[in-house]
Length: 364
Image 1 (cartoon, one colour):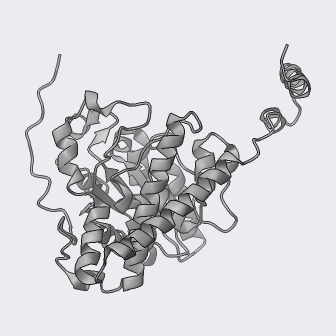
Image 2: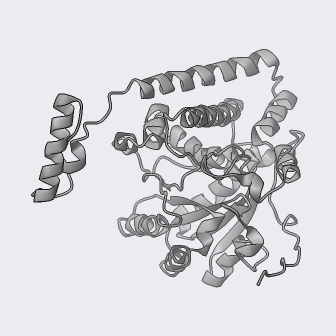
């Protein structure tokens, strides 16, 4: 039986916001720590992330990249998080956090490789405190808690930022991780990128609570809600709670209200479950446009400076894409070499077939 929709509830009244859609900052003191150069760097990273995403979608449509979860519209979350972190902190991402990963040191080329199905693109550079992308919804949360426990046990001055989508809150991993983090008082901040849809499941079909943030109360954990399309609000909120987690071992849950402007993935058709009017309304809150308007108001930003940033980002993306397309393919024999200490007979036979194909250009 089809259930009736839940009663509409006000979910806007407690959202922390600094940057309005017209580019006005309602509290300059809150962003006083950010230098003009840092704000421009944020703007550049927002654009770099979106342009990478657009190129990746193009490559996917050409059959040169695998299924891609587009992050268009959600860039402010990953960029705000990036600038809120300290070098000692750990990052545990889901799969729409390219901006954070680029800022931390993952190359654009390797990110193309990863989504192209090449395992070499998933290798984390030495010294980088990030785990790999988690495709399994919610599966990375227990790992994040384990890292936070290790940081506390080793008395490291580190915090863990774990990003998840709203869909992950329906997984058992979420509840178990939240509970353990709170009981052990671990230095971890869970950040929900709530884009309103868990693929095609709307929020009111996923939770009976007014918000996702209030779930933290059941675990004795602090929480906050922020405008996920406002890079300043994301930065300020994540920074404050991460600093406290790091210094006082107080875990927290942050809910970022955002929206994905594209389909869930390139294998999805969002027009089957959401309206054009809904998408158009959220396009007015575009995080890149908002920060651009702020720059125009505060830093005499002009078309020439904007074009310079966009051209620089476009060149960087195109260079990375060419490197990806020209990257020597992996040796297919590696599929067999690193699974078992002693290769079983049936894999030896398959490996022999691959050897024959490589030598003769055809299989048996």
